[in-house]
Length: 447
Image (tube, rainbow, N blue to C red; front, side, top):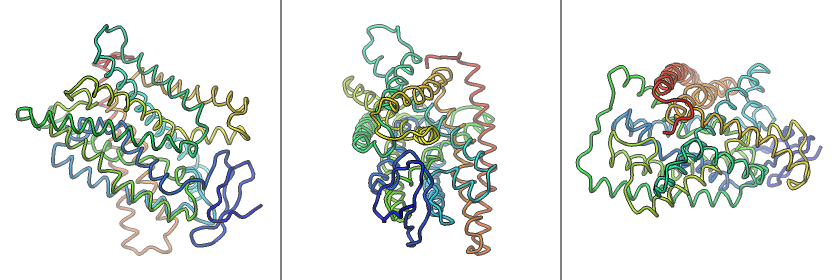
């Protein structure tokens, strides 16, 4: 078994490998069918920034600011940013724990806790990523529909049709791009088009806000409904900043893997969050409690400019879906021994069947229950909180317990219990929201 030098890339072929850790110790690499140690920290920073500035940012004015108001929304977003950075740093520092490189979230949890937690983490992670991608496909369909209604020739096509078109586009892209490292130029494209729709949404919201009469910023609803929507919005706060697949992304970065990941994370949570803040706060300022779950439905401006923003939002979701589906792709490619050229007939056929089936199911669920804000809340409650905060703090506590002071241990336990309670409360609130919306709308609704 060879030893990888610090800047070498590794392509898993069933035999694993070894690398030098940040401390110049030799660590083992588990087998994988995908490339690891291939990407610079800048490329990884682009991946992370693509995640937080995806088309989801067009919904935060309505999904976060409306239920929380100015004080709750602004303070909540800043706190969520800081706490999310902290939790992600904890996970990143465990990447080479115990002399083994943990390239999957479930591998890290299984190494620390054992086989049962390995499978529990796997289930939580894939549920998290599946629901994130359901939301992305809903967003993609909403973007296509928003562009369609700008040119009112007829009203034959409804939201479920556009969700189906979005699903097909995602399937084609997933077949053409074999793994996460292969995105490369697409990350640059994704960043550019993200800035385009964010800039357009920001500029048009700013114009509308300047020209509009005073807005209503009161939190809508009855006292009981406000309690539930506030709890649900707290889940959306943390959903905005977390991927639930940090070890998988970290697996692609070149050595020194921990040091380079720190650079990528600091870039994500400083410069990377500025576009999100800008469009979220400006959108709420311009439209108040009338802010939509898809901000481009609120803005007024030239039809061609709104059409450009919508098509950019649609295209960006395709790249984002591929990022968040990549752990599933890596798992199946490794399990079934995908090797050799990505253009080999066998490998193309495998991607057509397996990735097509996975994205087909994702598209079906998206069209069946197209309640985007509710899905953000539910995802944050039942998977983002456990994966990113509860598990991260407890894993770090277990891995480093001999090196932590009593004060540090108590701090991590406080995080575990606080986010455990918040997760439970947010899950109840999200399920209630979905039940309420389901009573108002039928399945395959045209929202």
